[in-house]
Amino acid sequence: MTTDAPPPASTRPDPVSAEVAELGEGPRWDAARSELLWVDIPAGTLRRAGWEGGRLRTLAEHRLDVPLGAAAPAESPDGGWLLAAGTGLSWLSAEGGVRELAQPEAGRDVRMNDAACDPAGRLWAGTMAYDERAGAGRLARCDLDGSVQIVGDGFTVPNGFGWSPDGRTMYHADSGHKVLRAYPFDVEGGSLGDPRVVVDFGDGPPADGITVDDEGTVWAALYGGGEVRRYDPSGRVLAVVAMPVSQPTAPCFGPGTTLFVTTTRQGLSPEQLAAEPDAGRVFAVDVGVGGPPVRPFRGALPTRLTAPPTHTPAEHGSG
Image 1: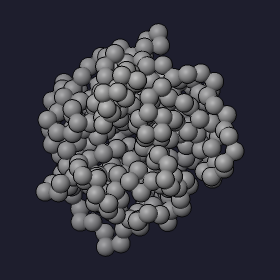
Image 2 (image 1 turned 90 degrees about the vertical axis):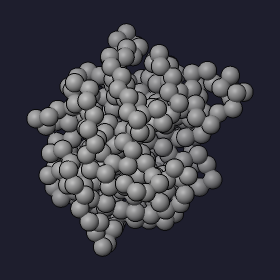
Image 3 (image 1 turned 180 degrees about the vertical axis):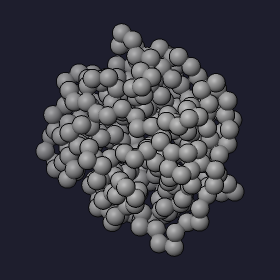
Image 4 (image 1 turned 120 degrees about the vertical axis):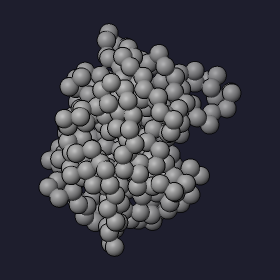
């Protein structure tokens, strides 16, 4: 990664949500409904908000009784949203009902974390231990036939997923191991090749959530670093968005060249909260480049878990 000073973003991020989350995460712009999805993980809350006049206006709020890592619209006859929640996947209907589906981590002291759909419409989700112990996290993939497979282990805090514009590269952040990796990706089969480390964050703040723009560069929220950075595929820093809060969690592209960024107030002291009164809100900033909206889940609703493979090419230590 280059040490040259990158150019800053041209504008300052503004807080745009009325709601304050304990741990805001998983922002996704649903272009089909013209609404932003974002979650408060420990509260088990999914919010859906319209974007009007530079502000988010909450349209609906759905609460679960388990932690909620992420949500994806379901492009199926059932509609609704596929949720990475608790120890597995659930379905939220358009009417607001919630039904548990496959539970690949049932019986383990872990929860679902971030999740996103690949270009074919499969859902990829990471899991992590509540105590964030090293190596307890795994990657699960929900295929188009509704089957769920464990496709990688040895992670600590598996976070953001993103795909290059041609779909041939998957980017993935493991915040616990403080690395951002790139995997050769087979869109048709959904398999991963051997990874390379794009950025090793070393002793610095790690990447949390990520997104990939239309030009193929990666935007990563640096948890504890108060920044969102733009990286080219080699790991060179192209731009830095300085956040008014210390704990940004995840970016996503909205309409035009708007970048939404979720944040958290979790773990902040009273003094830090006084200095960061907008911690936990969603922020928006014009970054001069756009990105794709959320990819919907295009498969059958999951009903079962297949046995994990004997060889898991996605498993890694410190990279």
